[in-house]
Amino acid sequence: MTAESTALKRELCEYLAGFVSENKRTLFDEALTWRTRHVAVVLEDIADSRDASAVIRSCECYGVQDFYVIARRRSFQVRLGVAMGAAKWIDLHHLGRREEASLDSLRDAGYRIAALSTRPDAMPLAQVPIAEPLAFVFGTEDLGLGEETHAVADYHVRVPSHGAGAKYNLSVCAGLVLYDVTRRLRASSHDWRLSEDARLDLLLEWYAKIPKSRESLVRRFLQERGLDWSVLERPPFSPKLPAVLTHSGKWTKGPKKTHR
Image (tube, rainbow, N blue to C red):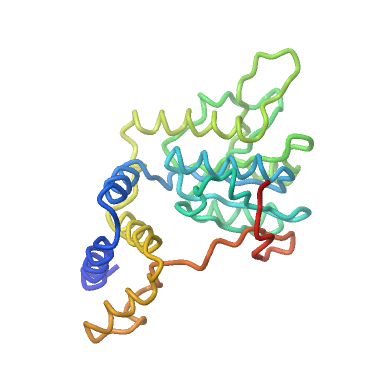
């Protein structure tokens, strides 16, 4: 990001802040303090859309910005009533349909792959190293993760349970993982926070999601300065969140109501 680009984004951010309430601005500033891309969550072929949507909510609550989906055999549906608006503030990504290729892209981005597993030789969650970025991969409750995922994982991780036979459901397991890892990160000296540039980009995106006339406001801001859209690396707002990721890898709008 060039100095000119950064200055323009800061100016646009200050402009859009005028259309955001003081309470919301304070909330965003606090949230950005704890936001991280050091940890990511990946769901593989999850069948229970309510449980999966609750994981989105947990990501937002724990400050985890990136949520990935691998949808090969099953569609993934965001249950907006369960996610409670959390999907608006984090980034949802679709990975490729093949596990190995999908996870290789995360590894190329600097992540170590941590596969949640019930295997007896899996390491306890508390022992997972946190110095390097981690992508935690969760499978279905009935089938777990595919063999390909286990084969390419850097760590096989288990969440300790002391029940007589019951297992954690997906959202509870993800919540326990995120609590443990983010707690350890925040108590560490590791560089887990967003960079200043990344925080600026994210704040700009969040501000742009508040006013309904966001596109016309940004256009007016640029026109008043004799600029056009090309000066922005990308518009600071996204299309409305699609509700369904199909097994073919395409986002669709899905039903108008995704909860009862």
